[in-house]
Length: 70
Image 1 (cartoon, rainbow, N blue to C red):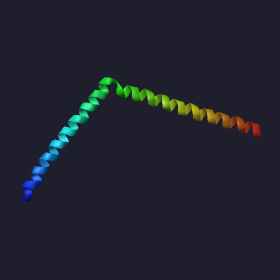
Image 2: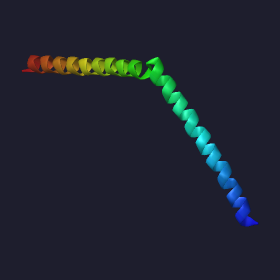
Image 3: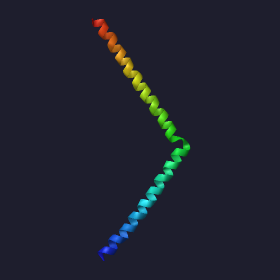
Image 4: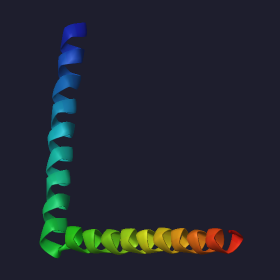
């Protein structure tokens, strides 16, 4: 009796896993076809460039302040 209950649940979980994998694959395919990843990559590159420029600007301002104190 216990073995059939566990076995029955195993099939249900296998079906759930298969449906979940299929949904995930469909979402990935949609994102690839719509150019989602290219847009996200471009936005992330812009964000990193802005942060780098900010860091360089702060570094330059710090160097100017240090020269004034000499």
